[in-house]
Image 1 (cartoon, rainbow, N blue to C red):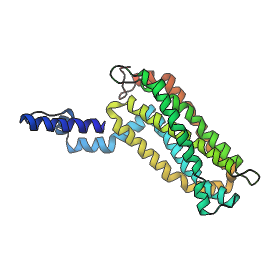
Image 2 (tube, rainbow, N blue to C red):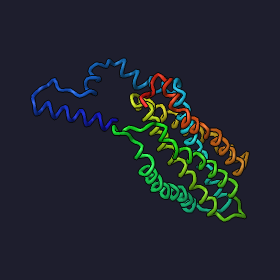
Image 3 (spheres, rainbow, N blue to C red):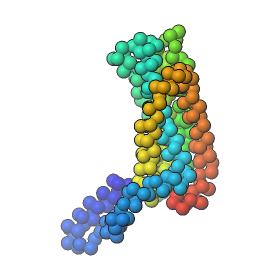
Image 4 (spheres, rainbow, N blue to C red):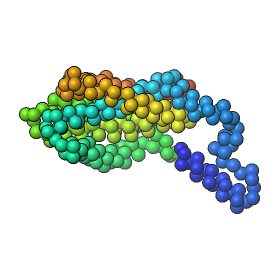
Length: 266
């Protein structure tokens, strides 16, 4: 949306320069002229919070994405415990343990693009629009990857099991986050096109808050519960949020029609 607005602005300025007609203006320029400082402050600072806490679809999706983000940072705290404490890695070797996460993403990307090309792209209408719920199937699949990773990682991290096994399991987290983040954020933008910037700003705020807060108790949790049960606790939390995506996929259209801000045209 920002790119489109900038393109419109450049095109309007170019037409004014070519024609000498200063009355030629694009829609974003007209809207900006009509906005007061109060309007700008409300849109920038207040609307992201009001949409986040008054729109159930926005709140639940933002909460889910924020939870996954927070779980990621808690889980990262377990890497030194596992690979230094259990497997005796030094600092350099511990860094290489994150390669499983990288490989998981690298393997997932081509399959995700293939799915978008074969399944999602044909469902766009002539105006280049897509029913928002059609964005969710990859996220519905990706949601299961998070608990699979956490259970696998937590219960395989022990001296009797080779260190490559938890590293392989860690790749499932990047599969889940890649599918969840891409699908849910696009869903929010499609469901709230007129308020996309505010909706995504609210998502960024919640995600950052969870990412900053969750690691504060990560060390104590892993110390008191142990790697296996601490990871399992995180997995159970992620499982509790999976039904959100299925509910939105089945009932999202009806929920959008009763919303004050979501698109209702299809």
